[in-house]
Structures are given as structure tokens and as C-alpha cells.
Image (tube, rainbow, N blue to C red):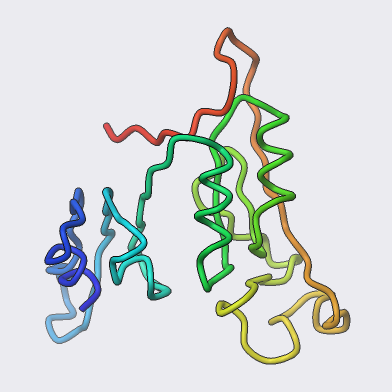
Length: 164
């Protein structure tokens, strides 16, 4: 439903997995990888939390606008930033209100020994799923996964994902 609504609301569907078929399982209900860009805060793709292979790309002009966009969401599962700027990454990881932050990694899903640390509408109950957070339920933790490359001449935060 959300894939169809995203298209109808004007988001650009770059990869459509809504007609996915898996050989040997003709009666399955399958969704393949789906990628949207040009999504706005008015669209259902933004307003509803999607669990599945659907990636929603939104564009802003500044780091502060990116932080405002993430923090305005009623959900707080995870977010990623791609940058060569350590300062921009550090500011972003501390300022965003989510449980999982990726720095130069596309999906900030932690390894099993970390808890699943969703915040806001992405979290239900009083305990996180597993790990030490099962005991420390009065805290809001943030898992940061980072990947850094050699320095080059590019300065500032690069908040662009290029599709090839």
C-alpha cells in the first residue's frame, strides 16, 4: 500500500519491488527492494514507519536542516550520514533523536550484542529487545556505527547518495 501511495503522491520510485516473485513460492506475499527519492514530509512514505526493504531518500541543503528533519519525525529508529567531516558527523550523531546512527554506513543496524535502540514512536514497552538494555530500561541509548576513509580535498559534510 505505501509503495503505491508513494507513487501516487509524487515520490520518484527508482527501484520498484512491489511485483517481486520468488521461484518455488508462487503463493507468497513478497516485497523486493524499493527505493524512493523526492519524498516530502507530507507523504505517507514519511508519515508512516516502514519495516521492509523500502528506502526513502529525502534531500536537504544543510546539516542543520537534516537534523531538524530527522528530529521532526515521530519515529526514532535509525538514520545515516555520509561525510568526510568528523565535526559534521560528531555534531549529527549527538543532535539527532534516534536510537541508531550510521556514519558512512547505509543501514545502522547493530550487531547482536548491541540492543535494538529505537526511540519515540519506533519503540513500544519499557524494555529494549535484548542485550544490556533489558536491564537499563530507564536510559535512552544511541548506537553509532562509523566507517572512515582517507582524507582528500573535499571539505564539509557530503549528504548525497549517488545511484549508479
